[in-house]
Length: 230
Image 1 (cartoon, one colour):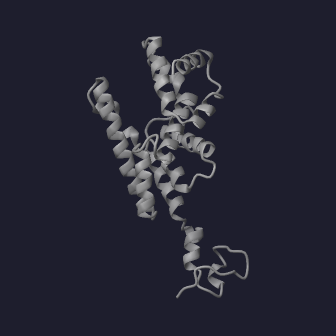
Image 2: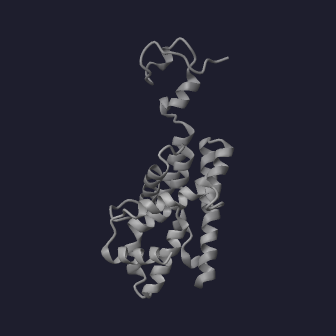
Image 3: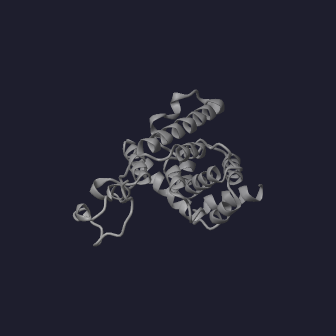
């Protein structure tokens, strides 16, 4: 039987691994020598490759969904400092290929909007699971990521709630100003209601982080009003 791990005679490099006196090929595969990386790293590459196909660009010129994935993961790091790799991958999958299903693929109006959102949750979850399995992640972990990305168990499943917290924080920190400009015709009461609903989706720790966001004065005033009415 091949020995999976042993102490090498010199620091491990791709160049000298073949000279070691034991068969370390499985270990070489795990540590990424010879161009091979572990399953979670492969999954991350596959997810980010999908993001790079987004035709929309952020202000810095990068694909918009790649920027969003970075922001989601950054908040997960703050919300769950010991987050396992699969939760980080789920965070990066929050909007996986969302650009491929524009809003106008569903009827206008509130019912059409909610149907669109539900279709996105299912599609993104299935695609994330597919890429994780393709990368070699265990099926149980791929299934768990799909549950989180699909928003199943909000308020009861810690992973699902962590993703929802991160998404709400990204919205408040990075998207609310552009959202307000895009919907300048909304009455003040509607903005307050949207922010109130966003606040209610968040856990206590996420709300505490949100209170310290540096928001434009007019947005901060709306948030204070929403919280006061909560």
